[in-house]
Image (tube, rainbow, N blue to C red; front, top):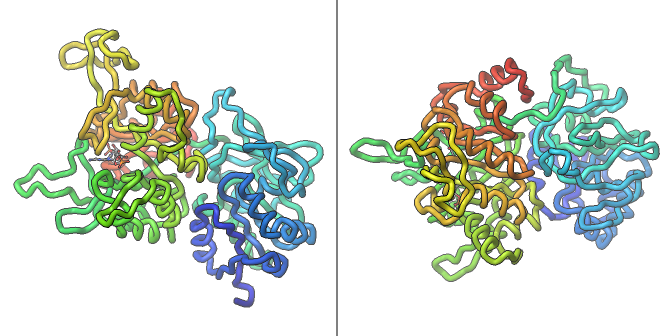
Length: 535
Ligand code: 1PR
């Protein structure tokens, strides 16, 4: 490695830095990995995408002698860009499982967001920055949104004010980036912030003289509601991995051949939705409950290829559970998830296995720490774990008919029923379980889920709008973000779900695949309705 096109990357092996690598390569640079403290000291420019939790990261840095080298490098004003935890570690200490001592270069303590002020924690999504004049690498952001995902943050104070180059408001006004000379660090993820994020990386990597300020202006003022494109993926009868789409979870054509509906190729469609302005892309391996995903190499390839060109968060779900293959080799759910993360996923989504874990937890009252949900969120952080709920509406004559949370429905059932509960299912909706969506949501939040993907089998593919009763019930009951899913048929359905419930994001599949409504039109509509979205 030599010359100006090399970036030194500090990856201490704690998680997925594939997206950062992809973004650096996309911008035309080669990567040299740090192996020894000397590699840090000799770097021409160093990027440190901190991942995982604060304490283990500091342990690795200390044990490998890298903490000292990093301090020397930064104190010598060498070009540095820290990302997310790579910003937090510069501070004196963190409350994350702590107090834990940090590198101590910037005065201040990193603390947890306070969820009691009505905000969901983690802070997940596209938010606005207040940028100071000399932020330099943030120059192209111009009032547009950037992507955050974190539960801890550093706060501005008199002692650290000289470092602060931007702040962001989320309950508190916290530090979104710091800069001193050639040293930069950002709490948000430039590698996941689309074009805006790539421009931040470009400004860090390229000589100032080659850059001109782009005139684009935006109107970002607060956390945006997210619009998510979802790709249900499975192998069709010919053995090809295709994007499919069901009606109430039935993905086969109502024809004599009864074949799996084929709506396109996963990598192509994901790339298209990224260009169209999707704030996230989700892949659901919908037969993952019966196939073993690590045997399903095409799915891993889909993630690898997609993450090379798609710079917004990618979620993957389906089949995340313990598994023993035909040769008796046991794979833990953590291994399955790790493989997905390594292949480019930012979040994994757990369906059936989270239902079993919640049932067990509600029955015993004990958190064993052994469920896939608990293990993955402990290792990768709860922001990386989504629980996908597949409930079916069950109408009731009386609210006392079941032991689960019952609601009075807005539209009565077929026999005039005024009440309903939402029964959770597993195995792609095939089996109903003795637990409601409300009970499940509360339990998985306690077990470490960072977000809920709330489907509804009755509404799936119907195009008649989201189940507002359900979305309201769940988004009012948990303090983690809720993604409303199933039933979008037009742009109005998106404004309706955001106006009438506390959903943080809305997801759709069919209308985007069939090109009935473009993502840009949904966003244009939301803007007109006064709902903040990322443009
Ligand atoms: O149980 O951990 O293996 O996870 C399986 C995952 O696959 C779950 O997330 C489950 O929701 C999903 N899944 C299983 N079977 C199906 C199916 O359709 N037969 N898809 C399925 C779920 C629902 C949504 C859909 C929205 C929006 N798909 O994700 O994309 O309903 O659709 P619309 O906008 O067209 O209405 P595990």
